[in-house]
Amino acid sequence: MRGLPRDILVSQSTAPLNFNVALHWLQDICNWLAATSLSQEIQTREWIIPATQTVHIVAVSAVVTSALMIDLRLFGVRWQDQAVAAVTERFVPFIWWSLPVLFATGAVLIIAEPVRSLLNPVFFLKMGLLVAAICITLACQVPLRKDARFWEASPGRRRGAQLIAAISVPFWVGIVFAGRWIAYVQG
Image 1 (cartoon, rainbow, N blue to C red):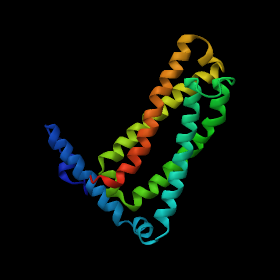
Image 2: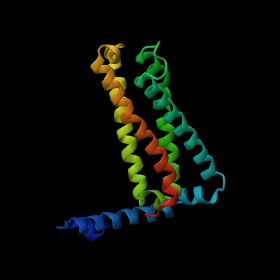
Image 3: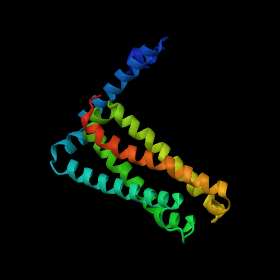
């Protein structure tokens, strides 16, 4: 195939070489992305990155606060007089509506400084935690679509809800810490 480096096309037999090839390939993508006119425009406009970071942080706050509110109900610490479904219905929209905002603002930040994110292992930790947190949120929400009293139906289900909350909280907190940590770790 024309235009692609030979080392990407040729299979390597050992894992360290495959990792090095992937890292080299990712570095090439970062260099290309940083040289695009869009990246250059974002980098040269002094207001874009701070404004984007502000919107990103506000959206993270909305997601994490909403997830924590749901988790407090799952733990039985708050709103015991309300069904889990009612509390979830109140806070889940803030999670799902904020995620596209996070995706868009995160994409702008990556385009602006691709090496800072895409070559940083903490960025991949953050993305892994995000995927896990979304899965945990769905694990809480999906059963409620069929049965609004699902998590209150038995002591075993209540323990399951508490387990979901116990897993969810560290994931969301980890996302916040990883997001801040990205700035201090070099890839």
